Image 1: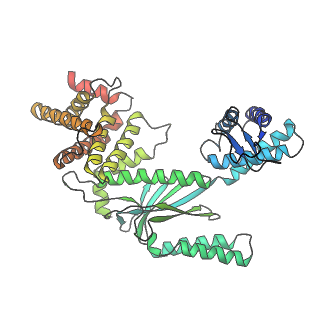
Image 2: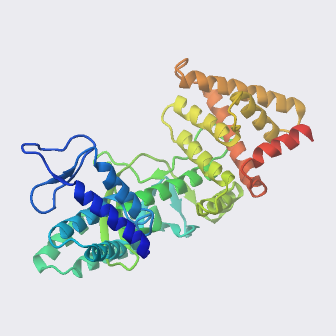
Image 3: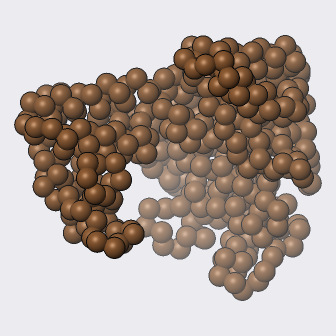
Length: 431
Protein backbone atom coordinates (compact mmCIF):
# COMPACT_ATOMS: atom_id res chain seq x y z
CA UNK A 1 0.00 0.00 0.00
CA UNK A 2 1.10 3.58 -0.61
CA UNK A 3 2.12 5.87 2.24
CA UNK A 4 -0.98 8.09 2.00
CA UNK A 5 -3.26 5.04 2.18
CA UNK A 6 -1.45 3.81 5.28
CA UNK A 7 -1.77 7.25 6.83
CA UNK A 8 -5.56 7.24 6.30
CA UNK A 9 -5.79 3.74 7.75
CA UNK A 10 -3.77 4.85 10.78
CA UNK A 11 -6.29 7.64 11.40
CA UNK A 12 -9.14 5.13 11.24
CA UNK A 13 -7.38 2.80 13.67
CA UNK A 14 -7.01 5.66 16.15
CA UNK A 15 -10.75 6.32 15.84
CA UNK A 16 -11.49 2.64 16.52
CA UNK A 17 -9.16 2.65 19.55
CA UNK A 18 -10.86 5.74 20.95
CA UNK A 19 -14.26 3.99 20.78
CA UNK A 20 -13.24 0.65 22.34
CA UNK A 21 -15.03 -0.16 25.61
CA UNK A 22 -14.79 -2.94 28.16
CA UNK A 23 -17.57 -5.49 27.82
CA UNK A 24 -20.19 -4.53 30.46
CA UNK A 25 -19.98 -6.33 33.79
CA UNK A 26 -21.92 -9.60 33.69
CA UNK A 27 -22.52 -9.49 29.92
CA UNK A 28 -21.59 -12.67 28.05
CA UNK A 29 -22.05 -11.25 24.54
CA UNK A 30 -22.25 -7.72 23.17
CA UNK A 31 -25.48 -6.19 21.89
CA UNK A 32 -26.60 -7.01 18.34
CA UNK A 33 -24.47 -5.47 15.56
CA UNK A 34 -21.61 -4.81 18.01
CA UNK A 35 -18.05 -6.05 17.42
CA UNK A 36 -16.12 -7.70 20.22
CA UNK A 37 -12.40 -8.49 20.63
CA UNK A 38 -11.28 -11.32 22.85
CA UNK A 39 -7.51 -10.94 22.62
CA UNK A 40 -6.86 -7.31 23.53
CA UNK A 41 -5.06 -6.42 26.79
CA UNK A 42 -7.24 -6.40 29.91
CA UNK A 43 -10.95 -7.24 29.82
CA UNK A 44 -12.84 -8.28 26.71
CA UNK A 45 -13.28 -5.15 24.57
CA UNK A 46 -16.16 -4.24 22.30
CA UNK A 47 -17.44 -1.59 19.93
CA UNK A 48 -21.15 -1.03 20.56
CA UNK A 49 -23.60 -0.87 17.66
CA UNK A 50 -23.19 2.90 17.35
CA UNK A 51 -19.39 2.59 17.04
CA UNK A 52 -19.05 -0.65 15.05
CA UNK A 53 -19.32 1.25 11.77
CA UNK A 54 -15.85 2.71 12.27
CA UNK A 55 -14.42 -0.83 12.44
CA UNK A 56 -16.26 -1.86 9.26
CA UNK A 57 -14.91 1.24 7.50
CA UNK A 58 -11.42 0.23 8.60
CA UNK A 59 -11.89 -3.22 7.07
CA UNK A 60 -13.13 -1.66 3.83
CA UNK A 61 -10.12 0.65 3.67
CA UNK A 62 -7.78 -2.34 3.82
CA UNK A 63 -9.86 -4.15 1.20
CA UNK A 64 -9.38 -1.37 -1.33
CA UNK A 65 -5.78 -2.54 -1.74
CA UNK A 66 -4.06 -5.77 -2.67
CA UNK A 67 -3.53 -8.33 -1.31
CA UNK A 68 -6.56 -7.61 0.90
CA UNK A 69 -8.85 -6.83 -2.03
CA UNK A 70 -8.97 -10.28 -3.66
CA UNK A 71 -6.37 -12.56 -2.08
CA UNK A 72 -6.99 -12.26 1.68
CA UNK A 73 -10.15 -13.52 3.38
CA UNK A 74 -12.17 -11.33 5.72
CA UNK A 75 -11.44 -13.81 8.52
CA UNK A 76 -7.67 -13.43 8.13
CA UNK A 77 -7.89 -9.64 7.82
CA UNK A 78 -9.98 -9.39 11.01
CA UNK A 79 -7.47 -11.61 12.83
CA UNK A 80 -4.53 -9.46 11.69
CA UNK A 81 -6.29 -6.23 12.71
CA UNK A 82 -7.05 -7.64 16.15
CA UNK A 83 -3.38 -8.56 16.54
CA UNK A 84 -2.46 -5.01 15.49
CA UNK A 85 -4.82 -3.53 18.07
CA UNK A 86 -3.44 -5.82 20.78
CA UNK A 87 0.14 -4.72 20.06
CA UNK A 88 -0.80 -1.06 19.74
CA UNK A 89 -2.68 -1.02 23.04
CA UNK A 90 0.07 -2.85 24.92
CA UNK A 91 2.71 -0.11 24.61
CA UNK A 92 3.29 3.50 23.65
CA UNK A 93 0.83 4.85 21.10
CA UNK A 94 2.26 7.09 18.41
CA UNK A 95 1.78 7.45 14.67
CA UNK A 96 5.20 6.13 13.65
CA UNK A 97 4.71 2.94 15.65
CA UNK A 98 1.20 2.53 14.25
CA UNK A 99 2.48 2.79 10.66
CA UNK A 100 5.04 0.10 11.50
CA UNK A 101 2.24 -2.17 12.75
CA UNK A 102 0.26 -1.55 9.56
CA UNK A 103 3.36 -2.56 7.60
CA UNK A 104 3.49 -5.73 9.69
CA UNK A 105 -0.15 -6.51 8.86
CA UNK A 106 0.60 -6.07 5.16
CA UNK A 107 3.75 -8.21 5.20
CA UNK A 108 2.05 -10.96 7.25
CA UNK A 109 -0.88 -11.01 4.82
CA UNK A 110 1.45 -11.20 1.81
CA UNK A 111 3.24 -14.16 3.44
CA UNK A 112 -0.12 -15.97 3.75
CA UNK A 113 -0.91 -15.47 0.05
CA UNK A 114 0.35 -18.33 -2.10
CA UNK A 115 -0.42 -19.87 -5.45
CA UNK A 116 -2.34 -23.02 -4.54
CA UNK A 117 -3.59 -26.16 -6.32
CA UNK A 118 -6.99 -27.39 -5.20
CA UNK A 119 -7.82 -30.97 -6.29
CA UNK A 120 -11.55 -31.50 -6.85
CA UNK A 121 -13.05 -34.80 -8.00
CA UNK A 122 -15.67 -34.61 -10.75
CA UNK A 123 -18.49 -37.12 -10.66
CA UNK A 124 -19.91 -38.44 -13.89
CA UNK A 125 -16.83 -37.87 -16.08
CA UNK A 126 -14.04 -40.20 -17.28
CA UNK A 127 -11.08 -38.87 -19.28
CA UNK A 128 -9.28 -41.37 -21.49
CA UNK A 129 -5.61 -40.39 -21.86
CA UNK A 130 -6.16 -36.67 -22.26
CA UNK A 131 -6.23 -33.43 -20.32
CA UNK A 132 -8.45 -30.37 -20.84
CA UNK A 133 -7.17 -26.91 -19.95
CA UNK A 134 -9.54 -24.25 -18.58
CA UNK A 135 -7.15 -21.30 -18.44
CA UNK A 136 -4.86 -21.90 -15.45
CA UNK A 137 -7.00 -24.85 -14.33
CA UNK A 138 -6.70 -28.39 -15.67
CA UNK A 139 -8.96 -31.44 -15.85
CA UNK A 140 -7.36 -34.89 -15.93
CA UNK A 141 -7.92 -38.49 -14.86
CA UNK A 142 -6.33 -39.17 -11.47
CA UNK A 143 -4.58 -42.53 -11.92
CA UNK A 144 -2.82 -44.51 -9.19
CA UNK A 145 0.71 -43.10 -9.76
CA UNK A 146 -0.56 -39.52 -9.62
CA UNK A 147 -2.59 -40.31 -6.55
CA UNK A 148 0.37 -41.92 -4.80
CA UNK A 149 2.49 -38.87 -5.61
CA UNK A 150 -0.21 -36.61 -4.12
CA UNK A 151 -0.15 -38.61 -0.88
CA UNK A 152 3.66 -38.56 -0.78
CA UNK A 153 3.68 -34.79 -1.30
CA UNK A 154 1.31 -34.41 1.65
CA UNK A 155 3.47 -36.61 3.88
CA UNK A 156 6.61 -34.71 2.84
CA UNK A 157 5.00 -31.44 3.92
CA UNK A 158 4.31 -32.94 7.34
CA UNK A 159 7.87 -34.29 7.55
CA UNK A 160 9.33 -30.81 6.97
CA UNK A 161 7.27 -29.24 9.77
CA UNK A 162 9.30 -27.96 12.74
CA UNK A 163 7.78 -30.35 15.28
CA UNK A 164 8.94 -33.41 17.22
CA UNK A 165 8.68 -36.98 15.92
CA UNK A 166 5.60 -37.79 18.01
CA UNK A 167 3.64 -34.87 16.55
CA UNK A 168 4.85 -35.68 13.02
CA UNK A 169 3.63 -39.27 13.29
CA UNK A 170 0.25 -38.03 14.55
CA UNK A 171 -0.02 -35.61 11.60
CA UNK A 172 1.00 -38.35 9.15
CA UNK A 173 -1.72 -40.60 10.53
CA UNK A 174 -4.28 -37.84 9.88
CA UNK A 175 -2.99 -37.44 6.30
CA UNK A 176 -3.15 -41.19 5.60
CA UNK A 177 -6.68 -41.44 6.99
CA UNK A 178 -7.73 -38.42 4.92
CA UNK A 179 -6.51 -39.98 1.67
CA UNK A 180 -8.17 -43.37 2.30
CA UNK A 181 -10.05 -45.03 0.75
CA UNK A 182 -8.11 -44.11 -2.38
CA UNK A 183 -11.17 -44.18 -4.67
CA UNK A 184 -12.20 -40.79 -3.25
CA UNK A 185 -9.88 -39.14 -5.79
CA UNK A 186 -8.06 -42.04 -7.40
CA UNK A 187 -9.30 -43.22 -10.81
CA UNK A 188 -11.67 -40.26 -11.07
CA UNK A 189 -11.69 -37.22 -13.29
CA UNK A 190 -10.28 -34.31 -11.29
CA UNK A 191 -9.96 -30.58 -11.74
CA UNK A 192 -6.84 -28.89 -10.44
CA UNK A 193 -7.97 -25.34 -9.74
CA UNK A 194 -4.93 -23.05 -9.48
CA UNK A 195 -5.58 -19.81 -7.59
CA UNK A 196 -3.61 -17.29 -5.57
CA UNK A 197 -4.74 -16.33 -2.08
CA UNK A 198 -4.87 -17.44 1.53
CA UNK A 199 -6.39 -20.84 2.29
CA UNK A 200 -9.93 -19.58 2.87
CA UNK A 201 -10.04 -17.45 -0.27
CA UNK A 202 -8.78 -20.36 -2.39
CA UNK A 203 -11.23 -22.77 -0.77
CA UNK A 204 -14.20 -20.54 -1.60
CA UNK A 205 -13.09 -19.46 -5.06
CA UNK A 206 -11.97 -22.96 -6.11
CA UNK A 207 -15.46 -24.40 -5.69
CA UNK A 208 -16.93 -21.51 -7.67
CA UNK A 209 -14.40 -21.99 -10.49
CA UNK A 210 -14.92 -25.76 -10.53
CA UNK A 211 -18.70 -25.30 -10.61
CA UNK A 212 -18.41 -23.07 -13.69
CA UNK A 213 -16.31 -25.74 -15.41
CA UNK A 214 -18.92 -28.36 -14.57
CA UNK A 215 -21.68 -26.11 -15.96
CA UNK A 216 -19.76 -25.77 -19.23
CA UNK A 217 -19.15 -29.52 -19.53
CA UNK A 218 -22.76 -30.40 -18.79
CA UNK A 219 -23.97 -27.99 -21.45
CA UNK A 220 -21.51 -29.16 -24.08
CA UNK A 221 -22.24 -32.83 -23.31
CA UNK A 222 -25.99 -32.43 -23.69
CA UNK A 223 -27.45 -34.01 -26.82
CA UNK A 224 -30.44 -31.87 -27.83
CA UNK A 225 -31.90 -34.77 -29.82
CA UNK A 226 -32.28 -36.85 -26.66
CA UNK A 227 -35.52 -36.29 -24.75
CA UNK A 228 -34.11 -37.76 -21.53
CA UNK A 229 -30.99 -36.74 -19.68
CA UNK A 230 -28.08 -39.07 -20.41
CA UNK A 231 -25.44 -37.49 -18.17
CA UNK A 232 -25.31 -36.12 -14.65
CA UNK A 233 -22.06 -34.30 -14.08
CA UNK A 234 -21.19 -32.75 -10.75
CA UNK A 235 -18.59 -31.96 -8.12
CA UNK A 236 -17.52 -35.03 -6.14
CA UNK A 237 -19.27 -38.40 -5.88
CA UNK A 238 -21.63 -39.46 -3.14
CA UNK A 239 -21.51 -42.24 -0.56
CA UNK A 240 -24.16 -43.33 1.92
CA UNK A 241 -21.45 -43.95 4.51
CA UNK A 242 -19.76 -40.55 4.14
CA UNK A 243 -21.48 -37.86 2.03
CA UNK A 244 -18.54 -35.47 2.53
CA UNK A 245 -15.81 -35.49 -0.10
CA UNK A 246 -12.15 -34.69 0.27
CA UNK A 247 -10.60 -31.68 -1.51
CA UNK A 248 -6.88 -31.39 -0.65
CA UNK A 249 -5.28 -27.98 -1.28
CA UNK A 250 -1.51 -27.74 -1.84
CA UNK A 251 0.48 -24.60 -2.50
CA UNK A 252 2.25 -24.98 -5.83
CA UNK A 253 5.67 -25.19 -4.12
CA UNK A 254 4.38 -28.11 -2.03
CA UNK A 255 5.21 -26.34 1.24
CA UNK A 256 1.74 -26.14 2.78
CA UNK A 257 -1.34 -28.36 2.77
CA UNK A 258 -4.99 -28.00 3.74
CA UNK A 259 -7.19 -31.10 4.17
CA UNK A 260 -10.71 -29.86 3.36
CA UNK A 261 -14.07 -31.65 3.10
CA UNK A 262 -17.27 -30.69 1.26
CA UNK A 263 -20.72 -32.16 0.77
CA UNK A 264 -21.32 -34.27 -2.36
CA UNK A 265 -24.12 -35.49 -4.65
CA UNK A 266 -24.93 -38.26 -7.10
CA UNK A 267 -23.99 -38.41 -10.78
CA UNK A 268 -23.85 -40.65 -13.86
CA UNK A 269 -20.88 -41.05 -16.15
CA UNK A 270 -19.66 -39.20 -19.26
CA UNK A 271 -16.62 -40.88 -20.84
CA UNK A 272 -14.48 -38.41 -22.79
CA UNK A 273 -11.92 -39.58 -25.33
CA UNK A 274 -10.45 -37.72 -28.30
CA UNK A 275 -13.54 -38.40 -30.46
CA UNK A 276 -15.97 -37.26 -27.76
CA UNK A 277 -13.82 -34.20 -27.04
CA UNK A 278 -14.01 -33.28 -30.74
CA UNK A 279 -17.82 -33.56 -30.59
CA UNK A 280 -17.94 -31.45 -27.42
CA UNK A 281 -15.91 -28.72 -29.09
CA UNK A 282 -18.35 -28.85 -31.98
CA UNK A 283 -21.11 -28.06 -29.49
CA UNK A 284 -19.35 -24.98 -28.23
CA UNK A 285 -16.99 -26.32 -25.56
CA UNK A 286 -13.94 -24.36 -26.79
CA UNK A 287 -15.87 -21.10 -27.12
CA UNK A 288 -17.24 -21.55 -23.60
CA UNK A 289 -13.76 -22.29 -22.25
CA UNK A 290 -12.49 -19.12 -23.91
CA UNK A 291 -15.36 -17.17 -22.36
CA UNK A 292 -14.68 -18.71 -18.94
CA UNK A 293 -11.01 -17.67 -19.17
CA UNK A 294 -11.82 -13.99 -19.71
CA UNK A 295 -11.04 -11.81 -16.72
CA UNK A 296 -13.75 -9.49 -15.42
CA UNK A 297 -12.15 -6.45 -17.02
CA UNK A 298 -12.18 -8.09 -20.47
CA UNK A 299 -15.57 -9.83 -20.18
CA UNK A 300 -18.33 -8.17 -22.20
CA UNK A 301 -21.99 -8.08 -21.26
CA UNK A 302 -22.67 -10.97 -23.64
CA UNK A 303 -19.90 -13.07 -22.03
CA UNK A 304 -21.41 -12.61 -18.57
CA UNK A 305 -24.89 -13.44 -19.86
CA UNK A 306 -23.55 -16.55 -21.56
CA UNK A 307 -21.88 -17.97 -18.45
CA UNK A 308 -24.96 -17.22 -16.37
CA UNK A 309 -27.17 -18.92 -18.98
CA UNK A 310 -24.94 -22.01 -18.90
CA UNK A 311 -25.22 -22.01 -15.11
CA UNK A 312 -29.03 -21.91 -15.36
CA UNK A 313 -28.92 -24.76 -17.87
CA UNK A 314 -26.87 -26.85 -15.47
CA UNK A 315 -29.23 -26.03 -12.59
CA UNK A 316 -32.14 -27.24 -14.71
CA UNK A 317 -30.25 -30.22 -16.07
CA UNK A 318 -29.35 -31.43 -12.57
CA UNK A 319 -32.64 -30.50 -10.87
CA UNK A 320 -34.50 -33.23 -9.02
CA UNK A 321 -38.05 -32.05 -9.75
CA UNK A 322 -39.48 -31.01 -13.16
CA UNK A 323 -40.83 -27.67 -11.92
CA UNK A 324 -37.36 -26.48 -10.88
CA UNK A 325 -35.88 -27.79 -14.12
CA UNK A 326 -38.49 -26.04 -16.26
CA UNK A 327 -38.14 -22.68 -14.49
CA UNK A 328 -34.34 -22.70 -14.90
CA UNK A 329 -34.66 -23.21 -18.67
CA UNK A 330 -37.11 -20.33 -19.01
CA UNK A 331 -34.73 -18.15 -16.95
CA UNK A 332 -32.16 -18.65 -19.72
CA UNK A 333 -34.50 -16.99 -22.19
CA UNK A 334 -35.03 -14.12 -19.78
CA UNK A 335 -31.28 -13.83 -19.08
CA UNK A 336 -30.38 -13.53 -22.76
CA UNK A 337 -33.35 -11.60 -24.14
CA UNK A 338 -34.80 -9.42 -21.36
CA UNK A 339 -35.23 -5.82 -22.56
CA UNK A 340 -33.93 -3.04 -20.34
CA UNK A 341 -37.40 -1.52 -19.77
CA UNK A 342 -38.85 -4.91 -18.66
CA UNK A 343 -42.25 -4.09 -20.20
CA UNK A 344 -44.16 -6.87 -21.97
CA UNK A 345 -41.40 -9.25 -20.94
CA UNK A 346 -42.86 -12.53 -22.18
CA UNK A 347 -43.74 -11.03 -25.56
CA UNK A 348 -40.26 -9.59 -26.05
CA UNK A 349 -38.59 -12.86 -25.05
CA UNK A 350 -40.84 -14.96 -27.28
CA UNK A 351 -40.26 -12.65 -30.21
CA UNK A 352 -36.49 -12.67 -29.66
CA UNK A 353 -36.31 -16.48 -29.54
CA UNK A 354 -38.42 -16.81 -32.69
CA UNK A 355 -36.40 -14.24 -34.64
CA UNK A 356 -33.05 -15.74 -33.68
CA UNK A 357 -33.83 -19.42 -34.12
CA UNK A 358 -36.22 -19.52 -37.10
CA UNK A 359 -36.25 -17.82 -40.50
CA UNK A 360 -39.43 -19.30 -42.01
CA UNK A 361 -42.45 -17.11 -41.24
CA UNK A 362 -44.80 -19.92 -40.17
CA UNK A 363 -42.18 -21.73 -38.09
CA UNK A 364 -41.20 -18.45 -36.49
CA UNK A 365 -44.83 -17.77 -35.53
CA UNK A 366 -45.24 -21.28 -34.12
CA UNK A 367 -42.11 -20.93 -32.00
CA UNK A 368 -43.27 -17.50 -30.81
CA UNK A 369 -46.62 -18.98 -29.67
CA UNK A 370 -44.85 -21.93 -27.97
CA UNK A 371 -42.49 -19.69 -26.00
CA UNK A 372 -45.37 -17.42 -24.94
CA UNK A 373 -47.24 -20.50 -23.65
CA UNK A 374 -44.16 -21.86 -21.85
CA UNK A 375 -43.51 -18.48 -20.24
CA UNK A 376 -47.09 -18.28 -18.98
CA UNK A 377 -46.65 -21.72 -17.45
CA UNK A 378 -43.40 -20.58 -15.85
CA UNK A 379 -45.25 -17.67 -14.23
CA UNK A 380 -47.96 -20.03 -13.00
CA UNK A 381 -45.34 -22.27 -11.36
CA UNK A 382 -43.41 -19.41 -9.79
CA UNK A 383 -46.52 -17.72 -8.44
CA UNK A 384 -48.19 -20.91 -7.17
CA UNK A 385 -50.85 -21.32 -9.86
CA UNK A 386 -49.71 -24.86 -10.75
CA UNK A 387 -47.26 -27.19 -9.05
CA UNK A 388 -45.48 -28.73 -12.03
CA UNK A 389 -45.30 -28.67 -15.84
CA UNK A 390 -45.98 -31.71 -18.01
CA UNK A 391 -42.98 -33.63 -19.34
CA UNK A 392 -43.31 -32.47 -22.95
CA UNK A 393 -43.14 -28.81 -21.88
CA UNK A 394 -39.93 -29.53 -19.98
CA UNK A 395 -38.49 -31.10 -23.15
CA UNK A 396 -39.55 -28.12 -25.26
CA UNK A 397 -38.07 -25.66 -22.75
CA UNK A 398 -34.78 -27.58 -22.52
CA UNK A 399 -34.40 -27.76 -26.30
CA UNK A 400 -35.22 -24.07 -26.86
CA UNK A 401 -32.87 -23.00 -24.06
CA UNK A 402 -30.06 -25.15 -25.44
CA UNK A 403 -30.57 -23.90 -28.99
CA UNK A 404 -30.60 -20.29 -27.81
CA UNK A 405 -27.35 -20.61 -25.87
CA UNK A 406 -25.69 -22.36 -28.82
CA UNK A 407 -26.82 -19.55 -31.08
CA UNK A 408 -25.29 -16.99 -28.72
CA UNK A 409 -22.06 -19.01 -28.52
CA UNK A 410 -21.77 -18.98 -32.32
CA UNK A 411 -22.42 -15.27 -32.64
CA UNK A 412 -21.02 -13.74 -29.47
CA UNK A 413 -17.87 -12.39 -31.13
CA UNK A 414 -20.02 -10.13 -33.28
CA UNK A 415 -22.27 -9.14 -30.34
CA UNK A 416 -19.78 -7.27 -28.18
CA UNK A 417 -21.75 -4.15 -27.23
CA UNK A 418 -24.11 -4.18 -24.24
CA UNK A 419 -27.31 -4.06 -26.32
CA UNK A 420 -25.93 -5.91 -29.35
CA UNK A 421 -28.54 -8.68 -29.22
CA UNK A 422 -31.40 -6.21 -29.16
CA UNK A 423 -29.85 -4.29 -32.06
CA UNK A 424 -29.50 -7.55 -33.98
CA UNK A 425 -33.18 -8.31 -33.37
CA UNK A 426 -34.11 -4.87 -34.71
CA UNK A 427 -32.14 -5.61 -37.88
CA UNK A 428 -34.08 -8.85 -38.36
CA UNK A 429 -37.39 -7.09 -37.72
CA UNK A 430 -36.85 -4.10 -39.95
CA UNK A 431 -34.40 -5.47 -42.51
